[in-house]
Image (cartoon, rainbow, N blue to C red; front, side):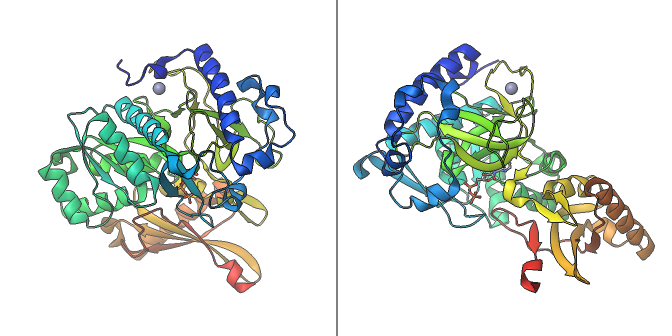
Length: 431
Ligand code: ADP
Ligand code: ZN
């Protein structure tokens, strides 16, 4: 097994030691920011002897970071900052994150480590099919690929035909792409009768939005690649926080650069080992904007056991969704991915769906618009009605509420080149 960075194979003891030293340094740096000098007022930094004391620190929430906009989180003077990113704003007002030159470099190294881990090497050509600009999946991945030494193409999103031409002409070996756009690209290849195995691409890094194992497998099939789950968030730099290894079984969180905790989203207390909860992250290396115990709002769990790849950095399960994605219908708590999981187990179902929450006769109900693949859409009415009933029944078994299912034509639902919007709540408009 080859590794990009010696830190990848540190023992648990070495990781814990580094975390303790780095946490104390982070605390010192954080205290130089206006935000943390207020938040930690009265606290004696000596109380934090090491990583095991992390729970003595207060949480930092997304609202804290928003309120600190624009400069209250800066732990260094402006002249040391070289980069600013702003999160996608999927759940509301965006947040700003700033980086020093060192920060940009460590981030690139972490990212390069992820790419090397899944088999990308410097003689591979890499195409970044992600939005550039403020979205960290653009420059974040780009700098990682260059750091690794790959010839890197900043393709951005859109213009699918040009993307394909570049893939072929440049003999691109690896791409980065958001899952919903990967499905779109795959569907287009199929429509045009292009055999994905005729393309040079071997590896796809997919992330930035929740997706099920079924979606990963579809992407692998449609694009003829191995697809690896890439997790990150702007507040923790962006991509390069946790990443799947070749085992494709959970994402290693880089524990030399972050401390990860999983807490009950209601109480904030740590969950029992292996239970699902909200991921809480602390930066250990970042200088421009250290963040302590940041509540990511993302739900996951630690996976038990050691990974065969030799890395001792703990693994998290694929993100189940955001705390804020959960909706309640007829008293049941439901996550969109539970629905996706069932939909994608039907071969007739295409890549796109939309969950609509609406009201009928003063009752909340779920309507799901499901795109059907071309070859099934031409089936006779009875077959389609049978499919509709089967999907509704399987979903009811999972979420305990019977949804209305609309089977719709391929390509009739809106497509996003950025993060897909899976749930539309029309109840608010009616109230
Ligand atoms: P925003 O929160 O506005 O979308 P970001 O662009 O920083 O801003 O996106 C980070 C968020 O995207 C994460 O908190 C998480 O909810 C989601 N995300 C990123 N990568 C993944 C992934 N691999 N699987 C599931 N969700 C992901
Ligand atoms: Zn591994």
